[in-house]
Amino acid sequence: MTELSVIIPVYNSRYTLKRCVKSVLAQNLSGMEIILVNDGSSDGSSELCDDIASDNRQVRVIHRINNGGLSAARNSGIEASKGRWLSFVDSDDELVPGTLAGNMEWAGSHPATDLIEFPVTVHYGSPESLTVNFEPTTVSGDRIFRHWIENEGYRNCYACNKLFRRRLFDNIRFPEGETFEDAAILPDILHLCREVRYSDRGRYLYHKSEGSITRTYRFKNQEPLFRHNFRLLREISDPGVDEIHKVRLWNVCLNLLIDLCRCRDAEHTYLESNAKQLSLYRPRFGALLSSGLPLKQVFKSVSASILGAKSFCNFMALKKYPS
Image (cartoon, rainbow, N blue to C red; front, side, top):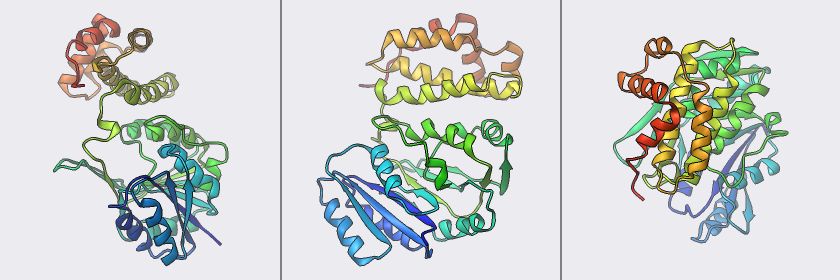
């Protein structure tokens, strides 16, 4: 019986694919299948996928004729998966030994757990890196979403450092044709979970290039991240969430809106409308001061509160990002 399906989208990644698949096979996990989804590659990755599959019984390949993007490839993998659990690995990334086996061990003995999140290190193609670790914690029921908000899970919103019970994707798919697809689905996934485990076992190694879409300031690329975070802000604007967490998320939304204003291809009607909407959620002055945000961020948020988000963003937009 297949316990885990590891879905690896592949697009023109012949130089990193072997390393990626090797790190997954090295997990030495029985009951695991690896699904390579070739998304219309033109650099020889298609043939490499077939070669890898011919040498490893755990690996099978789906060939998509046209390139549809990361979300489309993942969705194809979900449709073809046989496992009770799903994991997503990007073809230029790696897993450290023991990551999947260690966390599947927990999954096998805790039938209420629907999602397991484990450590991740993001490498930016330079000495710069970001590491996210977890203290072993289990959260259940109504506390799941609130715990995620309180611990600012939206700041590091990745699908790849998680194990998902397959049923979570019965009616959910990654949005195709958009960036920041993980941020789009994770809040909905969390609402479906009975129990979430934050694990200290293993690590996902995420290799993000300096020229990746998520680091390129184009309005179309960056807008989804603002939209998804603003949706969260509206969702938590009720008495059940501590005000400090609303302040922190409002600050995130403000910074993302400023980024959009600085894009040279910014859509001004969209920005004016959303700046007006964001102003409706602006925090109290006292809440800003007690939020624990760095003074620079407090000053920025206070300025936006006084001027109004629209006027403040217009001022910040005077400094544009390089085209």
